[in-house]
Image (tube, rainbow, N blue to C red):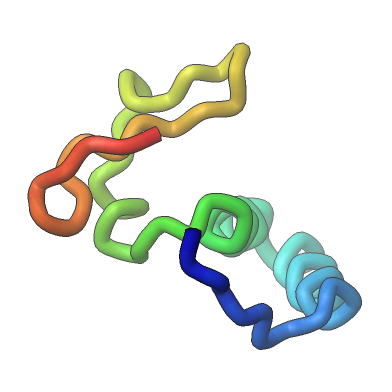
Length: 71
């Protein structure tokens, strides 16, 4: 498995999330999904309600990089 560098410390990410949550819940959710999942912004834009498995906290990316599907 490829090693992924962490560029921000958890405390720094928490500050960003706290600031976003104060101003706009939507922005907080976008940042959190991108951070937790590692998905690309273009993949986030393609998410539909049908792609989200609410009970399992899973998002199915249908048109990912290279046309691949992933969870």
